[in-house]
Image (cartoon, rainbow, N blue to C red; front, side, top):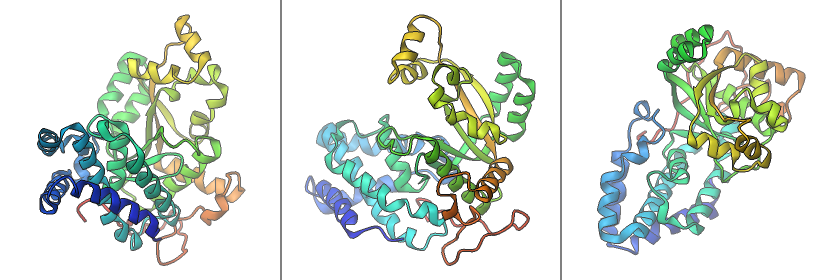
Length: 344
């Protein structure tokens, strides 16, 4: 897998634009300082931590060059991280189905950095948060969803589930399985081309490949208003977001209501907005938890029955490391694939 030269040229142009603001040596110092501030993968389960860790150096840039200069700095940092990651990807042992997404992913990052208003591109801005995690290697592209490699489930949510929802069995599961060691999935609102049932299925197949590469990962978790069990009755066309995993061994964990969940749930649907205004729908945030064995078993069945679009391209859905197309049985534990993290 090679990133096209056109994309690399665009990323270099973004990086060079920051050099024009100050001496090249100062530009290099600020970029290197930011990279040194990035947390280790183990500490980055907090999604916003990589961005927050840059606050001191960002304040220094803003004091001299204002918020627009800070935005150019953030863009230059993301571009530099992408440029450093590109050669690492060429020898990465990530699944081919994941690696094949990087050319388009980096091209979208380069296009965004070259055309967006960057005055808000910093801590608290969702595009910056997601671009930084992809560029630094905490997250990998999954097609319909970004796949964060260092997710976690709070064990406290299991206790809360038992107390507030009276779902004791689910609460015990969460307390037993919670903690670090999960892949977490995230939707990038800028890119919704695969926001459909087939796109999700293809993403789940990629997650299954990643799981087989690392036996220490417990499964996949996603958190959103659209995992609310009340949603399918209100918006049947979104039922697939829950149904496929729930039919294959996933379970739901209730978190509660909140302004951000209401805002997102009612933003694009007149039906949901009207029901909310009438007091007939109150959006609730849930986590969808899909344990590794159940997810892998679903992926194997999907490939065998050819029930998932493009499943054939995954072999026996099977993990395809760089250097060969070898599928392995679940009984065979292989060395986990090398993950290209920021500092290695």
